[in-house]
Length: 155
Image 1 (tube, one colour):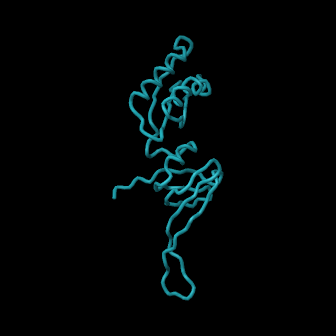
Image 2 (cartoon, one colour):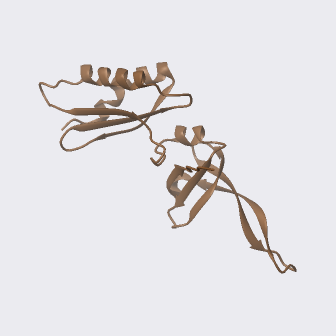
Image 3 (spheres, one colour):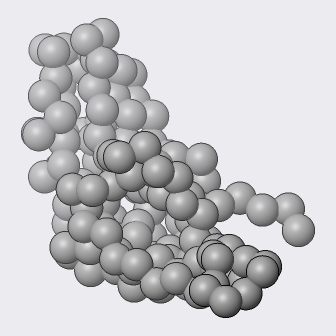
């Protein structure tokens, strides 16, 4: 079976030259290789074709046959790397915490340790009959987060 840790070095230089970043490499037991990439700008089909050629040239089909798929990270795909969080700053996301709590919020900050979310919720205010909408700003470390996806809205 082809090891995924030999694939990343093959494409690393190309990714950095083109302003792309690696999201995920997966290799099945049948040597079906899937590479997902992303960018702060845009990804062109040519980028996927170039990466495919680089991997084809770097691996030897005579030793081990494989299939190869190179794609951009999909909108429905959970974030895998910090760059995806930084790219999504200013966008709405759905965050599922390991505690089971689901939060739909605006991703306002992201760094290597944590993210900051801003959202509104209704809370009972002392001395008032009705609950009022308040803005909440909370930070979560990556070890508290089970998954994060971009919120797809058709408003």
